Length: 633
View 1 (spheres, rainbow, N blue to C red):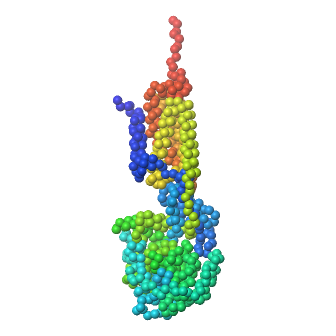
View 2: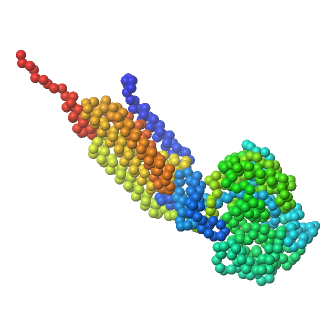
View 3: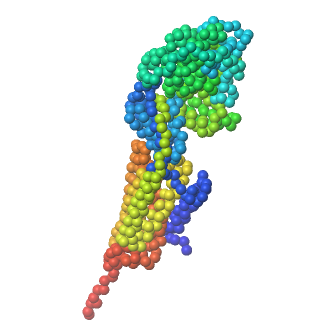
């Protein structure tokens, strides 16, 4: 027989709750899960519970060694935190330490955190000249006429070898723009010239004193190290030296090959390019920010073999509005660059300047196979690509190459969240032991168990049969929360920490409040003379608004705390909000339907069994009919 119109059908709500459980635990066991049953049921735990990786980055503003400003250090911390959190809610801790250090902590041992501290200073620079970057003196081919010492040797055979088609390059995006950029022509590799490995005359030894803070002082120290003859010879060079014209020049310039990358970084750009004994092995290892000044010409290497003299940076990473890792038409991973309004104009102007070789700024060693200038895509100290400009680009572009999805996503993340205002050098990386975390986990679970046990004991003592409703509701909430933790850990990287456990313990109090509100309202309805069966829906209607309001306030507090907080406090807020939402699900789909079913039983009418206490006797007294005396005739 169908229930009367308007009467609740508790079976429907319970069926919906059962469907939610089935879907959730199908995701737990089969979505992104592998291994044994224990592995499938294991949530992702945080740094304070299972240990993890901690890395310290030391910040420097430039090669002068000065510490960064507090504002720049805080901005760098926020960018690094955004890069780390791009992997999901991973409970990462990114904090400043002192006036130049940033400490990154992430759950999981042996995590590679090197890339998150990369400066990602993207520069687009026109290639002016090219030379051999092997660090040995170049011998021109026999047909070439020996040039005087210090004169350029722009023959085509001295054109540096480009990176090839597999190397990253910038191309026009298929969705917009005209023209394109092609990789440089695979012209002849520079022929090694008279090696400067001949025994030099007593080269000065390296200084044992610490590197001075001032660049000028550092240059003076380098001058003393290489000696006056070598310094004067290098200063007089106007182009890459041809040592065949003056064999003694090889001995003079030999000391420059003994310089450290830090010492090479303080030399003028022309000297770094013109001295053939300064090779890519030294240039690639220069300190971060060695070529960060966009207003200066710089020297950089591509693939560790060719070094280039590069023009000022006409387009910078800040001109890139967005960057995404996408698959191109050939199903290869590329980084798509969307320029800002001003950045698009700069990019178009740079490609026009390179395409027309305005002012003949690019010499023969810098031109591509079609005789056009190349533009180097410089990331930090290295050239990612140096493609030839084949037309004026008026649209967005792509950085293409032999990228994996991980590499393309990492580069896009660095460019999307912005270049760091300061540069970093990794100082130490260590694994944090999980021994202390295991004891913390046991303590946290013990505290949660004790809290739940106390609530259940109080519920059975005060509400008796109704206490079983509380017990079952808490069990169902715990199962929902546990399943959600496992799924969220796989999907968005959420990790459970001690702070998250604390948030769930607090949610037990919120759940207990909703029980008290409902049951006490039920007693009030019975005291007013209603039967238990009719009191249940009326008590629900009157208590529902209060329960929703209380949970909404808790949820709003959790959202605000999550937005404004950082680190483990964010995990506390997330866990509290998650447990509150799932408690509402249990309230609507289990607690009220099961109370409706209980109201139809005889045990519910017994004060001792139901836990309604004096409410039922009071109601019986109110409804008991009076026996008036029979009037005597």
